Length: 420
Ligand code: ADP
Image (cartoon, rainbow, N blue to C red; front, side):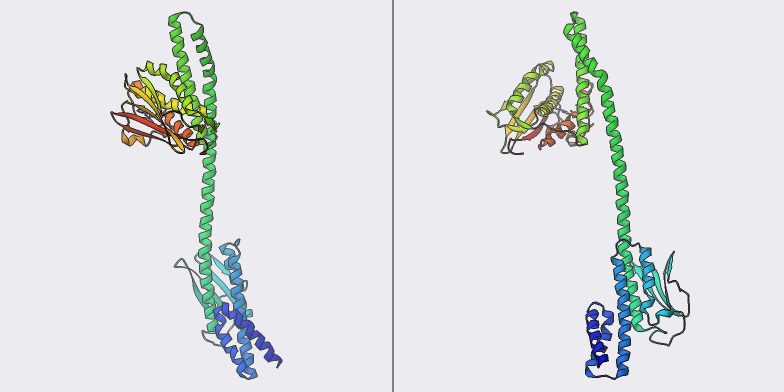
């Protein structure tokens, strides 16, 4: 009766285990026959078979746990699988195992090749990766496959299959890891290079500005104090040149700061109309020097924008300077302002030579210049790049419409107050 009791609880346990592991299915069916009354010898045989299946399950469970251990390398997994195998075979004390790969071997401590061998191929990504071999060290009675059971054939097959999947997974993980490491190294090198360039540009700007600052001040003084008309004219040229150079260096500095994300705006409610009126007054003399008239067109009073006045001045001045430079003599430059529901559009329009369509998309790239006749040369190709940077920092957009021979219109938008 005691035996019956133990057996039926075994059967129950095995029934549960069999749901997860198909290998045990057959034994469970056999064990289920107990209920219909079988002899004690048959029961012992069944109990033996069940304990064999439990060993197999333990082996598979051990392999599953190995697979879940994320830190183990493929080599570690293979060695531990080899060590798990003997306990699952019918005669563990005389069982040894080996996993053979192209360039490496993983063996149990007692490994020796004999005549009693069972083997299975490990396939990885559809290709032969290696073999698992199980040997009996001494002769054992013949069974389904030499001395081996057909359940052991199934088991070695399942182990090989599991290992194949695990290795596929690990290899993919490893290559992802090495890709990540490579990308990290590359990123660090790039950052170091960028930092080097930033430091170099900062030093360069400093070196250029130091002598220039005294040149600007001295030439300005000379221009104001000198009585000799000829010398005044010369001093004026020097002063203008020095100021231009100073502005270019500041622009270059701003572009660099913009590119590394350290350019900041001082945003506040801004009366754009007032700012444009004063800019037009300021630049009228310069426009006249170029033989050009300047007009501001806006409908009534404009709603306030949310912007940095210094930077908006910089954008408009850049566009105006270009327009003066390129507008045909005797022509007109127009600033047109159009408010929309959430932003305002400013247009600076000239009737100059215009810009070919295929170069328009490059105009806002730093350093881009269109080959020009001598009278228009002299820039660094950073004015429009800076305008784009500043407009976008405000949350606006900048673009150009131009037709060769008919002139150009540069547009930019700024958000209205309350829209940011
Ligand atoms: P730069 O500082 O050299 O003037 P910009 O970035 O301001 O550089 O302008 C880039 C190029 O765009 C110039 O080389 C010029 O060819 C072209 N460009 C800019 N504004 C105009 C314009 N109003 N009409 C024709 N070409 C223009």
